Image (cartoon, rainbow, N blue to C red; front, side, top):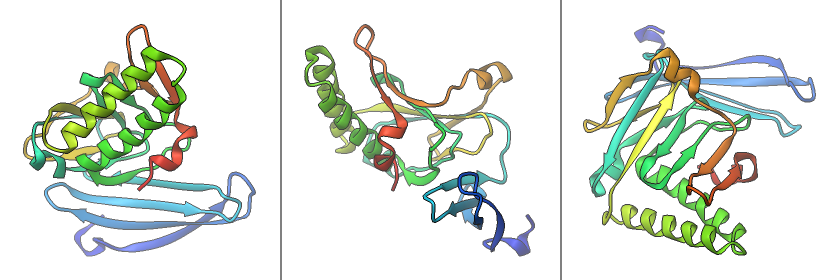
Length: 212
């Protein structure tokens, strides 16, 4: 895409993979300050099939971004998460991995933590009969609340085998993933690693909570 085509939009047509009717795909370019050009892709069929993704046009190699969230200012750091992006919070044992119905989004760190918080609340309610899992869920909620209020700290990591996700911040560190690391990235589940008390939640069961 050259400079004259920046921030342009166009449409293409194809067949819906579910109902095989005509499907319009909308393409919208955008220029994100300090990062570069991206392309937003959306499609919605009357049969309920939908697709959304954000492609980063300036970066294609597998990447890992790491941000230490240590205060309120870090919560405003911009986040681009493509459908191929995995989000990790190692201090809490949380991995948010892409699935077949994952949506892309552009938000900030606070928005990412809010999304995860909503999923943790749901998972905690489901584990009410398991005292250990329920207690762990409440503990994670409390930690996320403290960080969102600027009273705690944690690390947010985003990994993408296609280089279409990123954390945009002067504090964020970026690393090119090796082919071996890229191949290890998984899809399909949101996992709360609790050592012997594992709590797992299929992304498809909470898809409405992971959208803007």
